[in-house]
Length: 163
Image 1 (cartoon, rainbow, N blue to C red):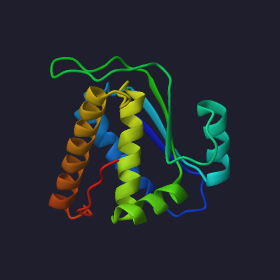
Image 2: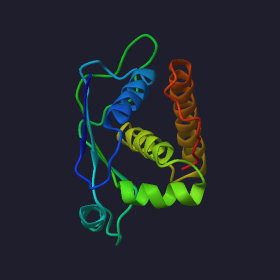
Image 3: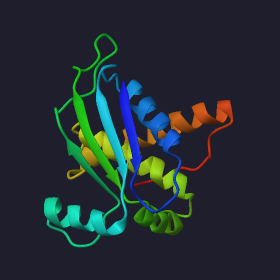
């Protein structure tokens, strides 16, 4: 599985952890081992430009997802098709503010946003109540599983999120 994490922001982040999280999420969702994913951390100004261009909304946002091959989760008996998942773009400055408001660490917020963005790439949405329940339930399970795995190896931060 090819996962590229690029920090194009002025904020120091743990790119290795985001890569580990992305790999965990993709493995849990049975994404084909030849799938490709890009996670980019971007400052507020370029994020605001993307937000206006693609969502017609002003100001920076926390996370944007740009799917490519419209891959979907696989099953226990068959992984997804190979292909390019797409790009998850995260704004660390927005994540910092949201973490403060939510009362958890910035890393917990970045983990949440990365997971949320990947789920959007895989076709999950939260516009309708049933979709919201499914997506946020899966997001919470994935984050809890990743943290539990990290705690067993001494790397977890024990924080949870609700975005």
